Image 1 (tube, one colour):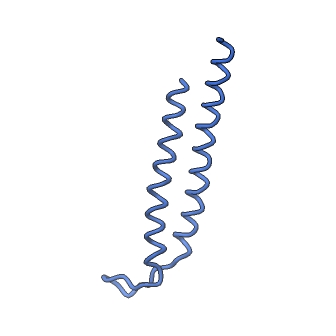
Image 2: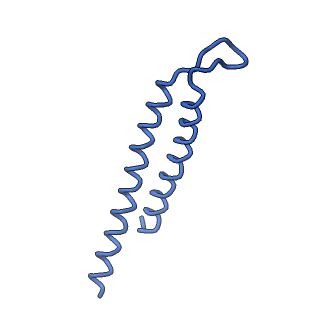
Length: 80
């Protein structure tokens, strides 16, 4: 696996996490309202849990990119 592919995986994780957080934010914004097609009231707990999970995924993906960057810097220092 190359440094570039590791960075790409980290970026993909951040982008996916961002999409999921936007969805959860929308769900939180509509929590407590009644859905049009049923009498079910939307709950706020599940979107909040999903938001926390995606925050952790985002942080982990950012750490992957940081480690790849540090590794690349070390390799460049060794070659210099």
